[in-house]
View 1: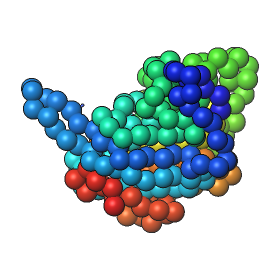
View 2: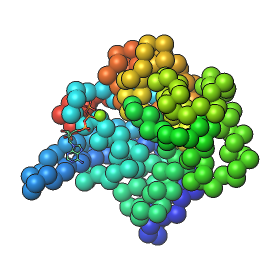
View 3: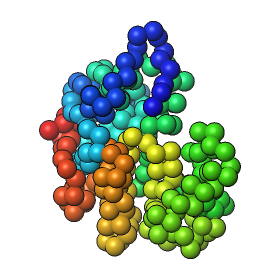
View 4: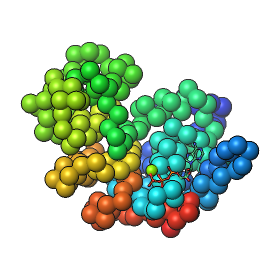
Length: 239
Ligand SMILES: Nc1ncnc2c1ncn2[C@@H]1O[C@H](COP(=O)(O)OP(=O)(O)OP(=O)(O)O)[C@@H](O)[C@H]1O
Ligand SMILES: [Mg+2]
């Protein structure tokens, strides 16, 4: 993965040697009507390539806030977050969003698919943003949808798909640029047992066959049990 740096010396790529994610003493606070709300305090952990980590914790403990930081959708208030050898806290907006586009795939609880666009088109969206040419995009989207068992639903729009099928489209979309990191926030929360097993199997397979790191927020003990490691957030602190 190549990224430009914001300032000379801001980032050093050390592929293979360092953990993929290195989170050190990360904090995040928000200010609401002049009052400071401390959400994350001193979160420290690492995630290796190919590792599946479950983040668990009570509602409001900061799981989604942490996931947004890991996905470079948000910046920490303090501490450092190193992604693939790059100190992201020192990156400007352009390099950060390129790193996010190339390096991170997201799966959300509510799928966030584009309505009135087919499954094929939805899976192609990150590749459009990444400048992948049309024919390659189509072929790859088709292959990804086949891999999640949706070869018979390529031209269906989200409202014509079941919840489990929509989540599989969202997963195919997240994988379309072969990210080093896959982030999933309650990806099985809206699904029945069979669909959630399938989504989890797909996430585990990505970690195994492509050496991608997977970080999954979950309330489901069955999902957490399949992870290599569980990080518990208690009032914004990692355990
Ligand atoms: N942009 C924001 N501004 C102010 N407060 C916020 C913001 N985002 C999150 N918070 C607060 O941070 C706390 C943690 O929120 P977060 O969404 O990370 O929790 P969570 O662990 O994901 O909970 P859930 O399991 O319910 O999804 C909450 O108290 C929330 O109100
Ligand atoms: Mg949440």
